[in-house]
Length: 124
Image 1 (spheres, one colour):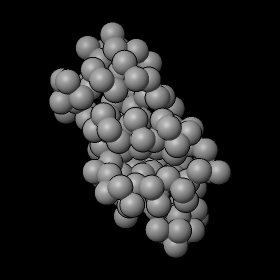
Image 2 (cartoon, helix red, strand yellow):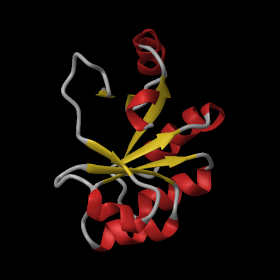
Image 3 (cartoon, helix red, strand yellow):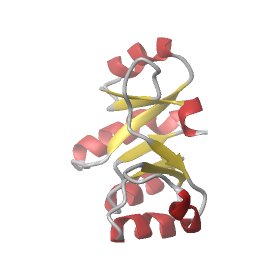
Image 4 (cartoon, helix red, strand yellow):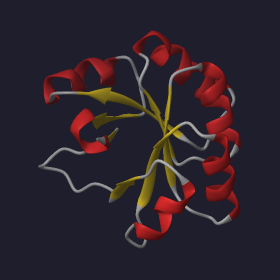
């Protein structure tokens, strides 16, 4: 299980961006975090940049996978289980992450067989 943002576990370095121009201000070898944006997805794929895309719909999930996002952060809990099922069925390379506020939520996410979690504070 992937756990990003827990103070007790070493995590990928994440850098939040809102637009392509923000990328030049990020640290090298970091994973770019952003809300779904097709242009940023394309840019990251072309330039081999690791990305963690925050999605709210199944269509966004599919696009994020097709453009090689490392992590797909499912912010809409209504589609979380479906997202994981789709990712497994279509053998996505991307990993599905649920947004959590506290480590007490990890057990439920693990029992739901979601790839991992990311703390809400880690993506703000």
